[in-house]
Length: 448
Ligand code: NDP
Image (cartoon, rainbow, N blue to C red; front, side, top):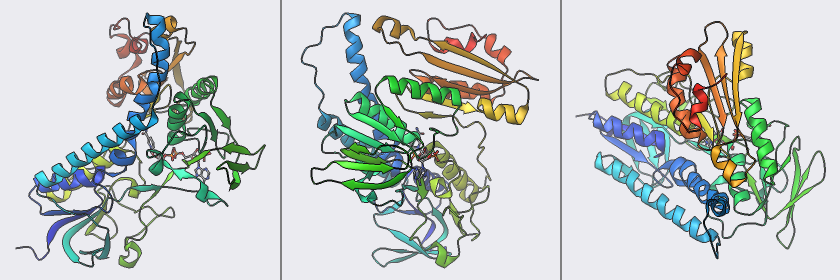
């Protein structure tokens, strides 16, 4: 019999924590997990999943408009935010239940309370109960940052945005990253007046410049305003609810709702990590080795709290590899190369591998192929929006080192392209594949 209450104690039942719990349990470990909020984590409860549902909801605005050109007569079309909001939240409840079932079905004990680490093999629950475990896994994720600026309390974050009582007339979104551009697309399609306010002149840092420029251009054409190079100075709220954002360069911005989307910080605070001596980076991320082990051998960490790559599928892989390594007798590491990613803006963009700029820096000689086309559907609807696909190849070998696209369905197409890029295929091998006509994806095998 083990000297510990559990073989594994997981703090945080998000994507990484639930996967690690389930896999460790399947390897025969006695597992417990503590979750202070709702099982499922940010992605399921207040992130990727409800966001994508809102993106679907918002898309109807353009689709219904286009329907007339396809012969449909629609009368009395109206949008009701509360119906969309409540249906999305109901689906979140359903998924929350499924995640709990997964834990229960794998005989994982769930403590619905906060846990702090009180020793290399001990956690203390909010109730005061102490629980011992052979291994502790920190999978607490990340938390939206709020800038330190006067009046910041007048803004909300992505945590609250799914629960709005009503849609604002004017919304300002602080930040120019994933969340800012995704919610700009949602609010704009639902009829709000949207302004993106970013401290630098660059949005979606890390994505290919040309693709990002196209998003900005298409967003502006839809009526989204960009106030770039505009760091916040202070925020005021008037008695009538109007929020005024004073920025360094230019006129103040007035809005009815301010959403902060300025990045997420690792949730490593108030977990007892400093007391136990777990090493943290300057940004507060838990420092781990390639097996997700901290400097304390019995304590591991996966997902956003380690600030390696803040994406759900990565946290899931890390949790799985950790469980296989520690409880399955199969040491595994995560391969961080060629991770595809997407921004569910309107239209969405997606990319895998090197951007053109990165490729030129790293490889020297590169060949770039682009296709700038109007999707067939847009021809009939009269929508002038054009899509852009970009393929970056190693000039010496012809190997495809990056694919970037902005287009309807770009994330769906890019997931498959990522297989080819990860496999190291060449442009010639793309060209050898017969096009599937008529489709948008065929552009990828017809690049000249
Ligand atoms: P991002 O990291 O994408 O972007 C942060 C933005 O905020 C940048 O424009 C940055 O500006 C700005 N910023 C950073 N710090 C400050 C500050 N102190 N004051 C003012 N502005 C600041 O963050 P998000 O919040 O949009 O998303 C968080 C993370 O969640 C993402 O990095 C991503 O990993 C994940 N996510 C993934 C999604 C997906 O896969 N589709 C969807 C949503 C989130 P600058 O660049 O000028 O420095």
